[in-house]
Length: 295
Image (tube, rainbow, N blue to C red; front, top):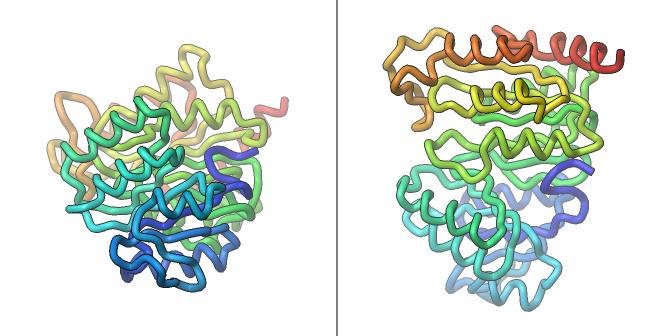
């Protein structure tokens, strides 16, 4: 099962002829992802790593009607247009890798996607991988292995690091998704946790959060209300950050008494969610959680 992408994903790469787009298309193909087309206006008729390039998403879909997923490597200034183009062409899962997209642009296309029934992952994210089936993103495929743990993350690097520790401990992943670190993202933790809750292959969930915002607190509330019954293990980045300090991601801003490290940990523990203090602790807590859920 997995969530959002699996062996049936057929991918269009928007911005395929750029340095990032071309590089990651090669890695996605090597992983086994079915990349069926690329789009760069003015470059139609060319090829990148054997993938045909078209001027528009609409044109790509005419030739490849099986395409159902898009990944966006378009520069920030033009990224919103690329996302609107994919939504209007009928693509239902759109992964936006691009960073530095203005907030009002992101708000616009995130709301538009919701109205049109499309799912946006990102912006400013590493993408999504269902190990052994498909990778639509920039994560190093070698650190993941198939298994029963769903991973959702606001951080890029920590996604790979914690997944690597899980893999090394013999714990595979159902789907790993980086929602992005910007203040406005398409998918949020509460939405992803709902998908994992419904996925029969996912037996436990790892949530890699960070200071700022209230996504982790909202997941805690869902657990308290009984909307999520699968065990969750959390790690929150930013434990040593001084309060009121903006850290790294634009989304990591602590405001109005919410989003501080201690508030998040308190909310999670109150909901009986196990919280790791270091990334290395996550596999041990996941093993405990899986054992407890089998009882």
